[in-house]
Length: 53
Image (cartoon, rainbow, N blue to C red; front, side, top):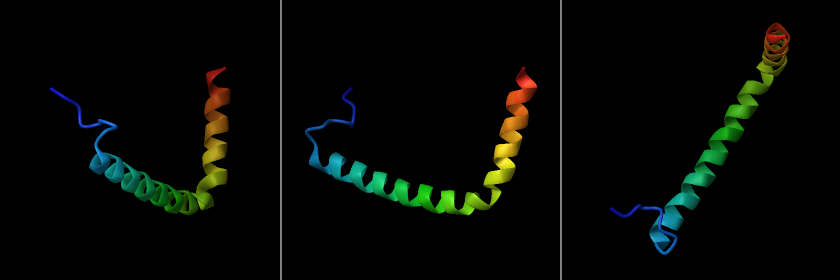
């Protein structure tokens, strides 16, 4: 059974490019939304890191 990730298929390449662009836009929106919680998340990450030691 062949995989659909053949580099010879222009339709697959086009769809992958569109998906990558859409994913990047989504990640940008998500990042902007999460900027408000950045400090709190960093604090939790720091506590978790120190808690391991």
